[in-house]
Picture 1 (spheres, rainbow, N blue to C red):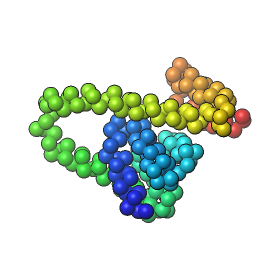
Picture 2 (tube, one colour; picture 1 turned 180 degrees about the vertical axis):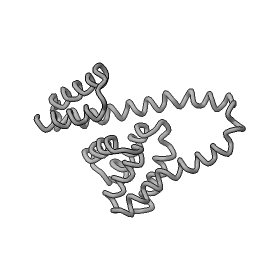
Picture 3 (cartoon, rainbow, N blue to C red; picture 1 turned 30 degrees about the horizontal axis):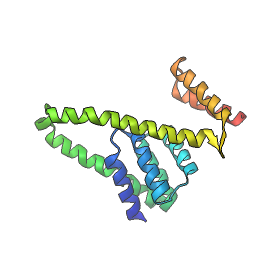
Picture 4 (cartoon, one colour; picture 1 turned 90 degrees about the horizontal axis):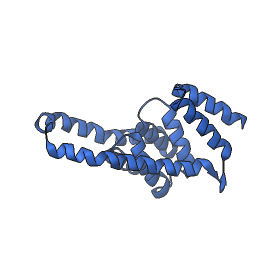
Length: 175
């Protein structure tokens, strides 16, 4: 189990180019669909908690999933797994940065990676939206209204994220 946790989160850390949001589909595929460590509802809760807590989304997800599956040791192993590729790649990048910093090939690769990461993020948003806004096949309109209010306050009124989270939580408790 611990080896599975480590290898699962090594893959997440290695292949989630684009940050935490790009890691979500891989975490979902591994933790929910492949290993069945989490249900889709637990995965949605995991994403919410990981986003609200300080730190990297990948590390927060690894901590929660590892703790859920194998306790404290599972959380530690999962975090080491998700961080191992980053540490390794950063060390290699530091060594080779000067040699390749003006490489045309590297610049071209990054041009292709950015839209792919955006596509992955959009796919996760669609999956999470289905989970949050369709409850037993019924559209959760109260949840959608809260989301629209939150979006309006963030985009138009420029409210801070913590204020919007608190207001959304209060509205959720009232509905």
